[in-house]
Image (cartoon, one colour):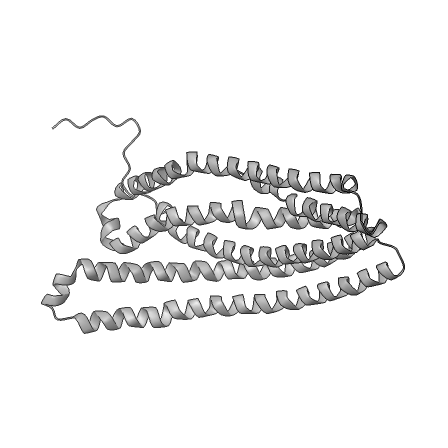
Length: 313
């Protein structure tokens, strides 16, 4: 499954390189011969065919494995939970238990999908794009590499903070779902003791104070991250544009090189921005997964000995 994002990371750079060859061919001659365009056309078509092949292979492998993995996750999670002592079920909301088992499956799906599609793809595309700049102009490579070394640590630190806040938010949400589920499962008792207003107020206080406050803090930090990334993004793109105009004016690069670098950098910066957003989203989903996974980290109080004999009644 992982070969697709790895091989696919080269597609955009190869695609833009074929465009550079076409632009250079038209620069040498107003009407180039088809034979002069054979190389870029071949590169372009071959890249499309290879990209389709690797992604369909990945999709086939996904189809053959993931449905059965999800089934095993549910079965093993339930098996672990059902072997807890009765005290565990007395002290834990049943709705929260069910919510966390569901969260493990959802968290696994989100985690794996993020790794496969949303993190690996843009990360490798950024690396390939930056390295490709070194073949055009080494100064461009150094400039973009330095900017990336400044940009990533800042954004990564802020994204990790989002992940921490997300874990706290999701823990609170699981508890809220547990409270609601327990009230619904015990609705006859609520009717009997005419405690609907009291139970509503209890849930409202929890969701509007604890859950909402943690959710707000997470969204606020995400907003700060977006502003910081936007400022760094604008500075880098403007500086690169001015520098490329300078290189073209002194004939240090061809017209095709100019087109290749500007399209590549728009693509690279776009993927960096996407990657930062995905890292934040990835950290958030990882926080949710960790929150759900805590149900399997609660130690069982009563465990059969490995060599226990069968009880004969």
